[in-house]
Image (cartoon, rainbow, N blue to C red; front, side):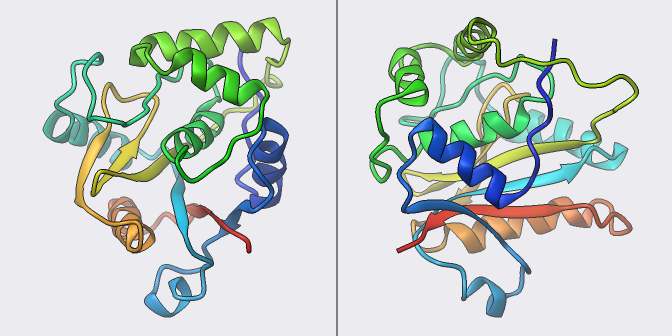
Amino acid sequence: MAWIPLESNPEVMTKFLHKLGVPEQWNMIDIYGLEPDLLAVVPRPVLAVILLYPESVKTEVQNKEDEETKSKDNGKDRPDGVYHMKQIISNACGTVALIHSVANNMEEINLKEGFLKSFLDDSKDLSFAERGELLDILILNLMLVQAPEEDTPVYYHFVAFVQKNGTLYELDGRKLAPVDHGPTTRETLLEDSVRVCKEYMARDPSEMRFTVVALAASY
């Protein structure tokens, strides 16, 4: 079984997060351009950045190289305080990216009681793989899994970028460990995440199907 892929639409993603218990002061917003003048108008603080990219051959080859060179985790150990979970259900990468975004910002997000808070409480001490398995079980029990229509291939993948303890981490449910992209701060998370997004885009300059969104305040 697989999920219907989550649309990279800030309005859809925001409604989904609010339904899961994220307070309405936090919203997913479009990043319309990656240049400094356009980034300057993005509401702050930005808690996480999510990149949707096409699964081109060049990108997938580079991803494997990134995992080998930057991921030092064996799937059990992980950087202090970083919540990382395995994607088990097909097409669930968008939901996993949103969970990564929220779970690594619990000190900022006063999550309401509900499915997501219960899941994070129950999974906080579990391993990377166990967290994915628990989500799989809960979703199946809630009958939230649907089979995509035949002949509807999915060519895109979501990854999330968060700041923990002064480090920019890329979180991907298909990689064994968070990918360390160097130092960042709460104030520069957006700009530092965009730097990595540009690296993804540079791997295939002819490809235009990239989307960048952010979890940000809406005061």
